[in-house]
Length: 313
Ligand SMILES: Nc1nc2c(ncn2[C@@H]2O[C@H](COP(=O)(O)OP(=O)(O)O)[C@@H](O)[C@H]2O)c(=O)[nH]1
Ligand SMILES: [Mg+2]
Ligand SMILES: [Zn+2]
Image (cartoon, rainbow, N blue to C red; front, side):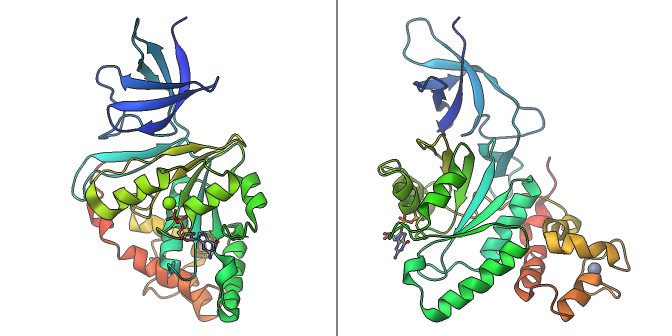
């Protein structure tokens, strides 16, 4: 029968690259005008989508006629004020934020925004601390603190050196058989890490992402890399691609696991944990039971401008 299934590993709008279960690659176009219920999207199909397609008579390419139901998808606005959204990727099993303490510096603000977004999408999140070969004694102490903080919050942490091939085997296992979104500032070593796991797999892919990152294009198309361990990696350049999810201010605290535990003891059920009396979150902060950086980043996220633009669905 002329009907096949596969996963979208690359999408540039009207054309997609589909990987079938038998390992075959097919370039496909979308059939007609796809609309997905509830999403006003600039791109109906994104990497990670499982699709049904058929070949066109004697042609080399296929036509996508079906998008299978998604377990999840991550979106961002096509433009800042636009009602349309852009789907970055679909069917993600886990989200990994890659962190370096310096060169480049990754702030806890960046980490916490990433984790809050993962929580909002109910996607398990992990942290990889790369470039462990280059830290000073003082930086290693700082790293220990960060790792114990995030581990205590339920986010597994890994130390790696893509350069020295340290910690690579554990990450290989982590990525095995799963669709993983890997995010982190440009220069933290995302490409180097994937290449350490699988030499040559990233080819120039990283360069394409980095080119987009320079702001030449308003639309970034994520690309999925197939690993021989059966895993897929979606390399996204930064928080722009995984961070602008719309939810109410009230929901933000719920995306902090440690605050979620505390907030039901607040005096007011609609407590924002900023200035209200009888706030269990602020008590925990005063008593050192809540991390100062986590609370500061909570306040900062509450102040983010995107909360004013939540008028679409
Ligand atoms: N010292 C050190 N340098 C690294 C490590 N991983 C990557 N680099 C270097 O950091 C730079 C940026 O790496 P790249 O993989 O392109 O980062 P990406 O932008 O996140 O993909 C390159 O010069 C790498 O050689 C590491 O573990 N240790
Ligand atoms: Mg790269
Ligand atoms: Zn409170």
